[in-house]
Length: 79
Image (cartoon, rainbow, N blue to C red):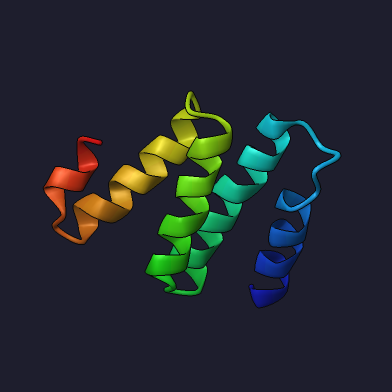
């Protein structure tokens, strides 16, 4: 799963891609980091970056809210 995370990170860093595509790669990266690699802080960072690129990204917002909810940070879920 580490190789997948690296590939998604490289894809997200490509500034020649549209912001929506980069946001999608960051969202997938966040999910891999959280679910497969148990790297919550890195997952939150990736999802925050995805939302910075595409504030309307429902998948990124849902994934980020789920991480905060599972960690008991209910105030962060609302943001």
